[in-house]
Length: 258
Image (tube, rainbow, N blue to C red):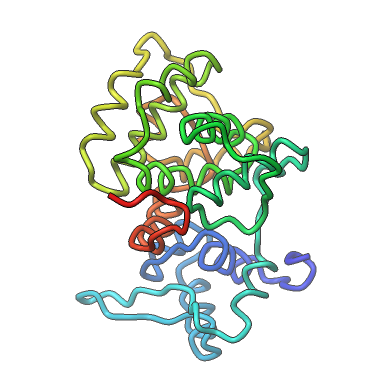
C-alpha cells in the first residue's frame, strides 16, 4: 500500500524509518540508514517538518529529526508504514502468548489470552519462541524482562529456554536488555547462557527475506549485541531502545510492584 501511495523511494524509506522503526537522527544519519542520498533525505525531512509529520531539535550543531507523535493522523501513519519483515502468525497459541505479554505490560495492540499464563517464566519462554516469527514480540521482550526483573526466576527461565532449544536466543535477549536499560544483572545472566562453540551467523527471524537487498539491509542494521551472539536481523538497536525509553517508566497494570 505504501509503495503505491508514496512513489518517492526516499520519502517512503524515511517514513518507514521515522514512523515504523521509531528512528531518530540527523539528516546524514537517516540518509545512511535509508540508503538514499543526503540531499534527497534533507529535502524530504524539511518537507515533512513543514507538514508537522516530524519534529526536530538541536543537539549541538546537528538538527535531529523524529516522528511527531502528536500529529492528528499519527495512528493512521503508523498503520500505513507498518512493515512486516516477518509475518506475525495468527494461530490461536500465538494470540494467547501475545495476550500473556500484554498482561505482563507489553504495549502490543494484538493478542488475547484465552487462559492465564502458567507463570511469568512460561509466558516469557513461549514469547521467546514466538519472537523468531513476530518482530513486534521481539521488540517488546526487553521491556517485559525489565518490568519483571525482580520477580522472574532467571534460572527457571533458563531451564525452559534450554528445553525449547532457545538458550542462545534467551542469552541474546538478556544481553540486549542490558544494552537498552543499563542494568548489568542482565549481562551477567546472559553470560551464563553463552555457547562459544556457535560460529555460524543465523537470521534471528525465521523466514526473513533472502534477497540481496534484504541481506544488505540486515547486515547494515544488525545491532552489535546481536552480532556478538551470532544473529543477523533487519532491526537496529534504536528500534529496541526507542520503545524501551518510551515505556520503561510506565507501571504496567498487571506488573508486580517492588
